[in-house]
Amino acid sequence: MTPWFVYLIRTHKGMLYCGVTIDVARRFEEHQYSKKGAKYLKGKGPLTLMWSQQVQCKRDAMQFEYRIKKRLTKAQKEDLIQQNISLYTLFSD
Picture 1 (cartoon, helix red, strand yellow):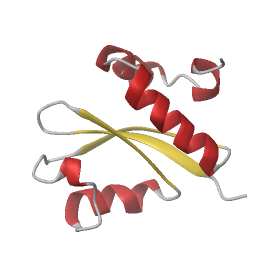
Picture 2: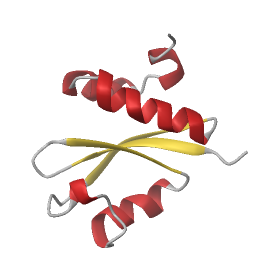
Picture 3: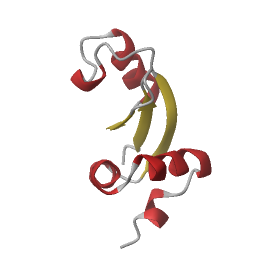
């Protein structure tokens, strides 16, 4: 199975963007320099890759992305970055 990653990018104004990919370096470069990057990040550079975590499969990655975007406050996302908590532990419901 191909490993998937969930990642957080910080914009120049401090906003956090969450995404999923199989190649974090490639995807981050797309966000910065390519038209393939997320519309949300257009014009919000410079961007900083703050955190990424490998998960078991695409399904898990997409579920964690949704949960991070919908359930976590910015403060909780900052804690995730600082403490590097396992997503499987954080969302063990």
